[in-house]
Image (cartoon, rainbow, N blue to C red):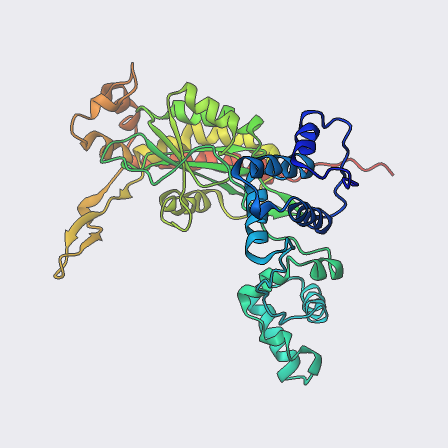
Length: 414
């Protein structure tokens, strides 16, 4: 900018009134500071009266585009030093310990060993230097485990290998994460899935196992696949089979239960969906122990998925009634030991069928579904004695297994 013709404060006033014709382009901060210093000297800023100083300030602000505070700082610098200059900042910098070559060595080792944990990778780097005498690994072998993860995020690392990707948690906001707390009331289900063997990379049929937290009422079903297309009808049938109202449906974090369609189904039934807490292995332990019951009666061999409907006829026709009305379960008694700690013991008199346990709850009738009475349930429970019903159930299981295990008949044409 050439403002050499502007020599008086009056001329500055005229410029401020009509500054459209005045063009000033700042090429750099150094150039702007140099012009400000030159202008302050030209108008003898220090000797001016207050009113005229204000006019010069407005002039500097309008031409440079700087803020009022910035102009004030630069003028203060001029008054103190006689100059307006860009300050050279001596910033603190961290010392570079690991060079790009070190990071490259780390990345190569990381990829060769298929991206192990930080601890394992540090051990490998240490062995390369100490055990195998590779001098180039001396510096990088000193890296801390935590800093390995920092180096994995650097440009030098990513240029060497593009395969590493840090695990990101998948946050699913469906269901409440908490432990079931039934407080002695039935209606708090724990649910889990168990598949029945593998064959030629194909999964067997899936068993859906549900157990009440308090009375250990157990209802089992089977599905071909664990997609919600198969799961929703079965879960609806399982819940309907329980004689008492269901309050809470507790699962682990499996996607077959923690999904929007399942949540909508349970909401319609006024049932709360909950899921296990992180690092709390006991949250769903009860139903996992009940998997052994299914294994004991259904075996461990592979069962094709296509038999799910036949298995359900057996489950809902015979097996579930056997489990709840004729098979005793262990219910713990809580006692205090010598150190006043609560301890669970299992006494002979604590063994009851789930139905007997349900009836033993005080005012148990209040928990039954509308239209369900203990008189009606007694007819189911006591129509046969335990041995008679077990015999009937085993005969039906034998028929089912003969059908499942029957080899396919094929016709060969010669």
